[in-house]
Image 1 (tube, rainbow, N blue to C red):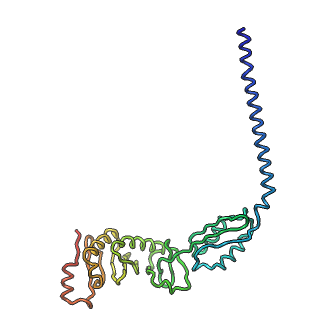
Image 2 (image 1 turned 180 degrees about the vertical axis):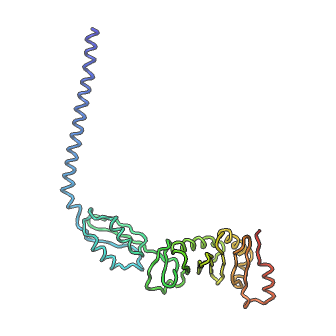
Image 3 (image 1 turned 90 degrees about the horizontal axis):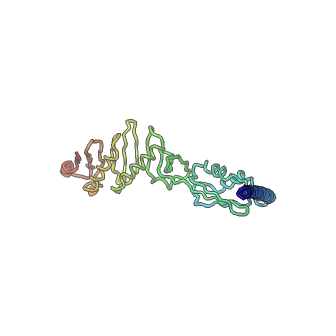
Length: 268
């Protein structure tokens, strides 16, 4: 009896194993047939889905980029279908224009492309003729009449990218004073000079800019801003102080002597 019982128990696992094998085989067979069917449907419907592009919409407030030149370029580039058109390649081609900052492209069923373009914004003048965006990339502008009030960056010794970066740092550090930079110059000695609104010049020297401008903001908010029209320049090329030069044609000698007494700041 024990022997027969053992025999019966031995056959049951074998039957279960056989059933599992049949189920697995059927599963793979069903998957294979489904893939073939999907592939057939995809191949047969691809020509319908991949229709020729019939419309391209350009969205964006364009002041420096010509819509007609963009349309001509796109007409030459877009020769594939709705699916086969390489959007990344098209995006890279558009961004070769120095005036285009960002491009977004999306497909619109059944046969259209929607292209959103964001133009670069001129941040500063660069030398005599040029203009720079926020990254220090040079822009070519034919009509300069609306941009003459942009700040001027001047140097023959640094790249446009480094000048723009330093302009942004100085602008942020002067934020508390309320003064805006109208000209920034880096000379052959490695020194920086800032001209601000109200024609005030700030001489920074070659290093320690953060501490120097903190010192300037402190002096400006405590006393200097009350006499801003009388200031010619502020010299920050000191280790722990600053000096103020006054516009003598606006002040009497007595006033200048008085200001020299009170506006030679020391923070040491």
